[in-house]
Amino acid sequence: MFQSFDNVIDPSVGPARCAALRQELLRRGLDGFLVPRADAHQGEYVPPSDARLEWLTGFAGSAGMAVVLADTAAIFVDGRYTIQVREQVDTHVFQPQHLIETPPSEWLAGELKAGQKLGYDPMLHTINGARRLGEACASAGAELVAVETNPVDAVRHDRPAAPLGLVSVHSDDLAGEAAPAKIARMATAVARARADAFVLTQPDSIAWLFNIRGSDVSHTPLPLSFAILPAEGRPQVFIDGRKLTNASRDHLAELAGIEAPASLLPALEKLGHSGATVMLDPDWAGAALAAAVSEAGGTVRHGADPITRAKAVKNAAEIAGAKAAHLRDGAAFARFLAWFDAAVAAGPLDEIGVAERLEAFRAETGKLKEISFDSISAAGPNAAICHYRVDRRSNLTIPADSLFLIDSGGQYEDGTTDITRTLAVGTVPEEQKRHFTLVLKGHIAIATARFPVGTSGAQIDALARIALWKAGLDFDHGTGHGVGSYLSVHEGPQRIAKTGHAALEPGMIVSNEPGYYRDGGHGIRIENLELVMPAAQIEGGERPMLGFTPLTLAPIDRRLVLAGMLSAEERAWLDAYHARVLAEIGPLVDAGTRAWLERATAPL
Image (cartoon, rainbow, N blue to C red):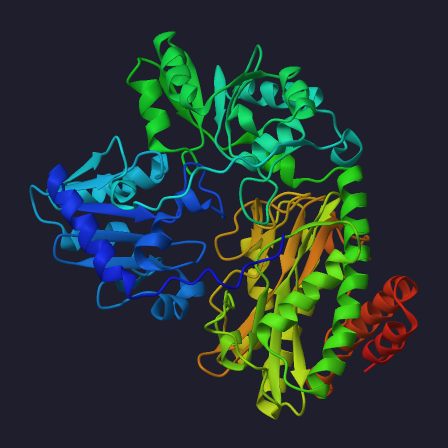
C-alpha cells in the first residue's frame, strides 16, 4: 500500500546498459532506438515490467523519453524534472534536454544522418507521436522503423513478470450508474462518430465503463487491459484471465466477451478484413493498433476517447463520494498537521518519517485502499524539485527555520484526494513568507474565479500567476489537473494550464495548485481540489457563470502569510475557508487536534 523509499537506481548503471543496448541495435541493423517512459496504455504509472526508461537511465519521473544513437544519447524531460534528471541520470551518457523547448522530433532532425534507421516499439508510441517522429526522420533523410520485439527487453535480463493484480467490482451505489447504461450511452457516441467500433486503450476508461477496478499499477486501481466497444453488439475486453475473481469474471461476462491480451491485434485485423471503420484516439492509442486495422484493409478514424469527458463529469453519487472522502481525509490530515507541529519542535524529523506518519494517519481511517501517488515529502532545497520523490539516499532531516512541503493523497472507494501544504518550521525568513503569500494570492484568484460556460482551463491559468508575474516570478508546471473518482489522481481532459483547452463543466474536479520554486533554496505549493459548479447569479450579469467550491478541507499555514499583502477580499476568503474547515473537520477529530485546529484556523 505505502510507497517504497528503497527503489533507487544508481546512475552509474547507465554506461553499461546503454552500451548493451547499442550492441543489440547493431545486431539488428538499427542506428538508434527510442525509449519512452510509457507502456502500451500511456498511463501515468507503468508496472516494473514496462519501466524501460528507468531501467536504462535511472530516471524515475512520470514523463520523458530517451533517444540512443550510435555515438550520442539524450533524455527528454519537462520542466517538472529538470533538476531531478541531473540527480538520477549519468549526464555524461544521456544529455538532458527540455521536452517542450527541444522536443525529440526537433533534436532528431538535427542529429540523424541520411540513410539511418531509427527503431521504435509501435505499441509504446501513440499514433500522433509516431507520426511526428516519422516526419522528423524523413526530414533528415532517415527512416523510422517499427520493431517486432523491444531491444531493451532483449538486454534486460532481470525484467519482472507482467502484473496480475486482482480485479474487483465497483458497486453501482458508488459509480452512480450501472455498467449496461454506460455501455449503451458510449456505444451511441461511437455510432454518432460514424465508426463501427472504438478501441479503448486507457485502463481508467475501461474501469469506468465496466464498473471495475484493478491493482496492476501503483496507487491507481487500474486493471491493465484493452477493450473494443462496437456501435452495435457486444463489447470485448482483452485481459489476462488470471486477474479475475469469480465475482469480477461473472460481472464482466454479463457485459462483454473476455479475451486474452494477445488476441487484441488479431481482433483488430479481423475488423480490418471486414472493412470496418475503427476509431482510435491518436493521442493515446499505440501506432501498432492503427497499423493492424489499416494493413488488413479497414479504415482508421481518429477521434477522442468518448469516455474521457463522460468520466470527468461526476454524477451525484460520485460527487457525494468525493465530499465524504475529503471529510475523512481532512480529519486525518488535521491530525497529521497537529502531530507535525509538535514533532518538529521536539527533535530531529526527516522526510521519510513524515511521509510514513501521514500515511499511517490515513490508514487509521480504516477506509484507505492506497495512497493516490508517492507522497512528496520535501525539506528545504528538496522542495524546489516540484515532483521530488524521497528515497533512502536523498532523505533530509528537516532543518530549523525553513519551509517544509508535503504533497500527498489517498485512494478511497468513494473518492480520490490530493492536497499540498507548505508548512513553517521555526522562524521562516521574510522573503520566503513573501513568496508564500504571492502563491496564496494566486490560489485565491483561482478559488474565487467566476467564468462563463465554455471557458477552458487555459483561459484562467494566468489568474494563478499574475501576482507572481508582477514580482518577476513564475512556476514551470500547470496550475491544476483533473481528478478521478477512485481512479487516476491525474485525469483529463480538464486541466488548468496553458495547454488546458477542454471546457470546464459542472461536476468536474480539478486541482488548484500554484507554486514557486527557487533552485537549491526552497519550494512552495498550495493545493486544494475544487469542484466545478454553477455560480450564483451576478447582479447585473447577462450570462450564466461557473465557479469552484473547495473539496479539500485543511488549514493553510497562517504563520507564512504576510497579511498586508492581501486585499480585503483575499483576507475574507481565507478567513471564510478556515471557518469552514473548523466547522466541518473539527467535529471529526480528537480534543487535542481540535484545540490545534482552532488556533490554526483563527481569523487573520
